[in-house]
Amino acid sequence: MSDHGHHHDHDHDHDDDQPGAHDAPLSGPALKVKALESLLIDKGLVDPKALDELIDTYETKVGPRNGARVVAKAWVDPAYKKRLLENGGGAIAELGYRGRQGEDIVVLENTPTVHNMVVCTLCSCYPWPVLGLPPVWYKSAPYRSRTVIDPRGVLREFGVDVPESVEVRVWDSTAELRYLVLPERPAGTEHMTEEQLAELVTRDSMIGTGQALTPAGRR
Amino acid sequence: MTRPVDLDALPAIPRDEEGPVFRAPWEAQAFAMVVRLHEAGHFAWKEWAERLSVEIAAARDRGEQDDGTRYYHYWLAALEKLVTEKGLIAGAELERRAEAWVEAAKRTPHGQPIVLER
Image (cartoon, rainbow over all chains, first blue to last red; front, side, top):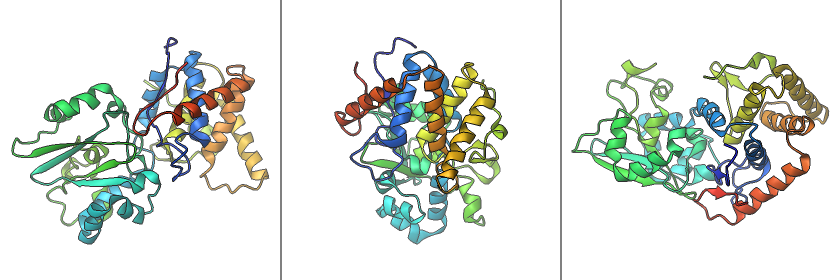
């Protein structure tokens, strides 16, 4: 990988340590990390694939499980759900998950008739304060392009079978606007607590490439 | 497959039962760089642990609160010093590259990947 003529920053404007730093897409530690990483890659001292592979291992560990708590609260608290759908960033901030990203999040509700899924066709805009690090496949060119052309085919590859009667809506993120999918609450969870419900909410279910787990499918 | 590194050798790394936890993507990136450089044989894990301890002790001496939130700032400081001392990267080179990224970010519209032209 020594012949790289350029680098892509997949976390444009997302990985600053200081939430709210709108005019400084790269600054502070995020900038230092970017500079170090690109030099180490250029010099052949680290393999970018090996870095990605390792980071992928921790993709769900940033802001651990914040999004799952948001979803579980919406499932048990109708008033919260209403606020969440009307003003995603504001309702998410109520739980203490802030930052420029959080303020700009729109929440999309999956229903028996509509399945939402999220993509970023330009780069890989991602609501990481609630979802953690974007998975490698989310950043991949095939996911980005194919989701727009053939969303049902992509969903099938993720093991999600959406009946023809259900409308699939694909939402393209931008740096200014991120999306969080509110998955359907699984059947048979009426007696579960908010904490137990959060365990059922997977990362993929909040991107729209999966469903929430059923109580039986819980790990 | 990744051989797990010995997290117990490090001073109080933020972690849960499955491994390290991060507060922002750059923290995970900084973590990954150290693990991969170590695996490539550029330094021993024990040496890394010692360097990190030195940074944390220095922060404590400066009176910074040791609540874990700045852990990866120390991690990054230790990494920058180690790569320059090992001669992997020159200090001036690092500064120039950071400036190049700032310039690239400035001329990139929101929503598009930042590209470093050279």
